[in-house]
Length: 468
Image (cartoon, rainbow, N blue to C red; front, side, top):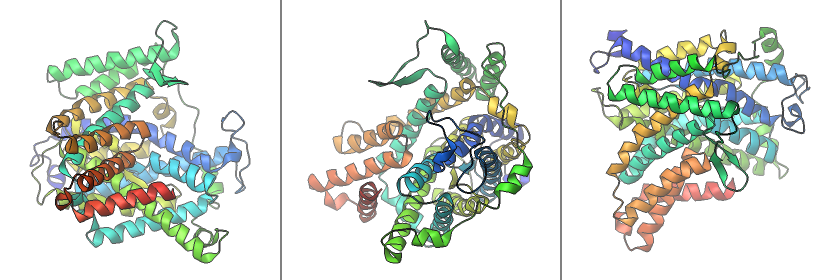
């Protein structure tokens, strides 16, 4: 393993790589259960008036909602494992892949519910987006995209992802809760209850991790997470899940999950021409979302880790994108939405992972999730949140590289950072940053400093906002 992944050469150890892989698994595993539930949004008949899933409800494709959810969860675990192994072995970087929550939300609630496409037609669009994605990479488009992003926005992407994941952590631990007027508010500690206990446990875990990091204790993030899991048991915050994988359900569902290419291009009421244009727009949108989700993660971790590898960041970036494109196509064949590089992969780098061995450890655990689903689904949100919050803290250090004295640098960077958590989208944050940067350069008479690629990206994002 040391020779295969160049662990010693990159300044790491087998123990560190294993620790970082396990830490990342505990941070990401909730997505393998959340994404399938999100995909089920493409089948509104599966839910009652209150939004609760009815397992016995018969879907339009002839299977029950419960069987469909089980099948999607199994396939999500398999797709995540395949994608992570491919990425680990090909790019040899500490990243993990899996079905994207953001893109699955887009597929379910925009493509299927709002635009009227069936889930099978959406899978065809996902598959084609993976193929188009791969072709664009072979043409060198990804290098031009990276070169078109200003340096201040690259730093802002790293900081923005940090704020985003920290905000996700605060929500998962119930430290902040939904509020009708202010959108979010601090949890009420005086009222007691599970949410207050979860918030207190998470804050205790973050404090423990902070103390261990100050004392340079190896594996601080993982140890802090494990302490939270153990303490969650007597607090009643860890309850074994009820999801059990029935492989008979898989055999029943596999017949109704397929890619409907004919339906994708002919489902529009405006005829075949309008159908092709609509399908092409959807495929391009999926490509944009996938490439910028992955690019954001790569940019963020590039400022966290320093590795002595052959080639530069462009070569590593290209390898990650190629793996992403192939994994997306494989995921569509399995029946799940775009497989992309998880931004939670930053937890691997923060725990000390420097090679693909970390990802390989995570991939094995993704597969084991199929067998240990009750335990994996029961991991308390307070434990998961500790890693997300600490990731945000450590990633926020790059903000010092942004020149906040110059408004033309500060405004695009700030919007990039703040729009990621507020819109719950990496892509939206990058879009706001690039569009603002372009407009500032144009209207302040600095067109000569504006790259053509930046203008093209800004126009693409503007078109995406108008069309979708």
